[in-house]
Every structure is written in structure tokens, then in C-alpha cells.
Image 1: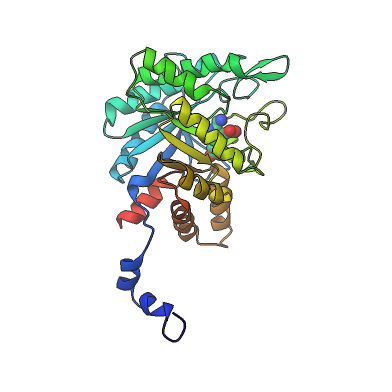
Image 2: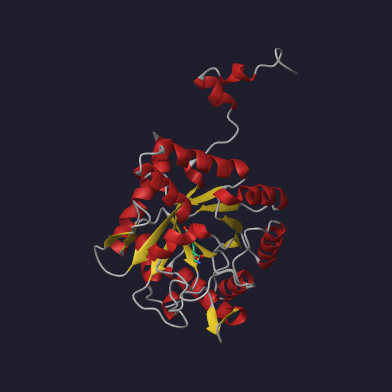
Length: 324
Ligand code: PBG
């Protein structure tokens, strides 16, 4: 049908019509809020490159979790900023580590919210890489056991789901195996399966104090040029037992989200990462853009591309907006 028989504007003419024919809807159910936990009491240290976000001690983590729950958000994801780092990232899998304590606090004070944990070593190793180092090289297989122990320690502390973000080959299988052996068959694994070596992680590395001290992450994170490889990575993690597949970052990789949505039948998550958040905040602070509108449009585009879940630093604001 062509103009004048077809007129696209007819169904755009009123708010009601627009509501009735809207194809994609953003919901509070889609949102996961990342939080950064630090040691101490009453600590709320601003993260300069991520306005509105803080490194929070456990008491403040609980307050934020409560706020997220009140806004209708189903889950938070916790990152830990330990007091000490070492070669093997031992504070990542310590029973009294910062994430383990934060999990226990949230689960006892705000049991209604689900707690997901980021499983990685980069915030805990003195070299800042996501695996252990042997002769200057990130040793894949030697890292697997430590990653699995980290995931197990999170489950033991009460985490509801674990999310490995290290990009070592084989870690999903290793984690699934150890969780199963130790009686945690019910804990799902959300795999950062398709994680690109991205400049958009910059602000996060300030937040988590996890910048690599030498080299970069290109020997384990994916080349932004590759799309077929995303299918291989996702397929491999599904074979190893992943329950949810994640693409990260989100906005520069909408094509990847779209492709994976056609290829796989697991729930798909997308991480709207720190750089995506900070750019919009910066634009807002300059008075150049309406950040609230940009965020809503961005998250909608991520959903439209095919993501079921979105990890976003704007989760609370967005949930409140959706409630309004
Ligand atoms: C840890 C990890 C990173 C992010 C999540 N988990 C950083 C990285 O890989 O360097 C980035 C999140 C963000 O930028 O918001 N491996």
C-alpha cells in the first residue's frame, strides 16, 4: 500500500494510538543495578568519572539495595573493591572478602532483592588482570580454579546468581562444575560470554580500581571487529552450562545483540557500561543534552535489539521514571 492509501501518521496522531501500537516496552523487570562495595563503615566515596555513583561500604550498599527494591528493580550486581591486592587475587575468594560480606548483609536486610555477583580477579590482583600471570602472560588454565573458587565463595555467602566477566576460556564449565559438586546446582550462571575489549570501560576501572598495570585486555577480551566470534563464544558458554548470555558493552554492539537473539534461545542480557553512562552524564552536565531522555531511548534500543535484561547504572532513575 502506498501513499495516499497508506498514511503512517494516522496511528501516530494520539498518545493513546502510540501506546496501542508500541512494539517494545521497557520494564522495571528488565533492570539490574551495579554497585561497588568497599570496606569500612559509612563510606560513600564519589566516583569522579561516574557522577551519581559511589564506592559504598556495606551499610550503604544495603540502603541502595533497599532503594532499588522500592523502585521495583529485581536484582543488583555487586563488584568488590578490596583493601589489599596481591598476585593471586586472594581477596576475591576469601570467605570474609568485601563482596562476600556485602552479599550476606544485603541478603539478611533486603532478602527480596536478588544478588548477582561479578566473578573476576582484576579488582583483586596487584597487576590488574582478570587471570593469574605466568612469565608476563595471563595463564588461562591456572586462572580457572581461582575463578571457580570465587564463584563458590559468593554462593556460600548467599549470592543468588554468579556472573563471570573474566573471559578466560572454559571458566563457565569450571564454575558450573564446582558449584554442582558443592551443592549449588540451583545457582544460575550469567556469563559475560561476549565481552569486547572496549574503551567504554574506562570509568569503571576508576570505580573498581581495576585498571591493568601493564598491557591491556586484548589477549582475552574480544576484538570489536568480530561478530561471528560472538556466536562461537556464546555457543561455547551455553555448552558449558551458562543460563544467561551477556553482551558487553551494549550500545556499540546492538548488531551483536540482534544477531545473538536470532541464534540462541537463552535469556540475553546487555551491559550498558560505565562509559556509556558517563558520556551521557557529561553531556547533561554541559547542558547539551537531556540525559533522562537519552537514557530511556538508549535502553529502549537495547531492548528492541533483543536484550531481555539490561545492566545499567541508571537503573534506579529509570525504574522511578517507569513508575511515574
Ligand atoms: C571486570 C569487569 C569490567 C566491567 C565489568 N566487569 C571491566 C573490565 O573488563 O575492564 C566493566 C563494566 C563497566 O564498564 O561498566 N572484568
